[in-house]
Length: 113
Image (cartoon, rainbow, N blue to C red; front, side, top):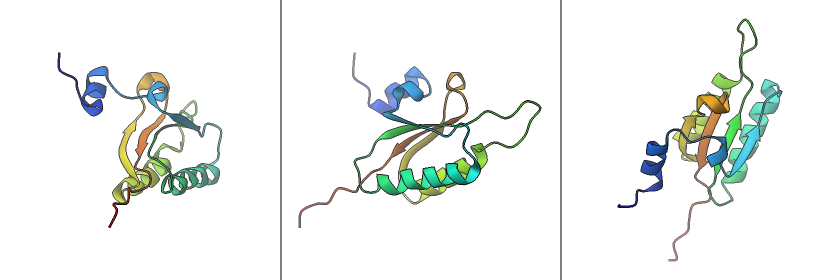
C-alpha cells in the first residue's frame, strides 16, 4: 500500500485534535485580554522557533448562550494565517471541545548565499 503524505493521512483519519498536537494552549477560564495576549505571545515566539502544532482549547458557550473567545481568537489566528505565521488552521473535533488546531510555520529557513 502506498504511503500518504501527512496531510492526506490526516484527512483519512478525520480531524486533527488535542492528541495529535505537539503542545496544548489551554485558554479555558481566561478572559479575552489574557487569551489574546497568550495567542499573540505564542505567534511571536513561533517566528523564532521550529514550526510545531498546537491545540488551542477554549471554554464552551455558557448555559443559555453567551459570548465565547471563539470568534476573537479565530480572527486573530486567521490574520496570522494570512501573514504566513500559520500553515494550517482548523477547528478541533467535537470530542475535544471548542478550540483550534494550528500548525505554526516557525522560523523561515535561510539558504546559504
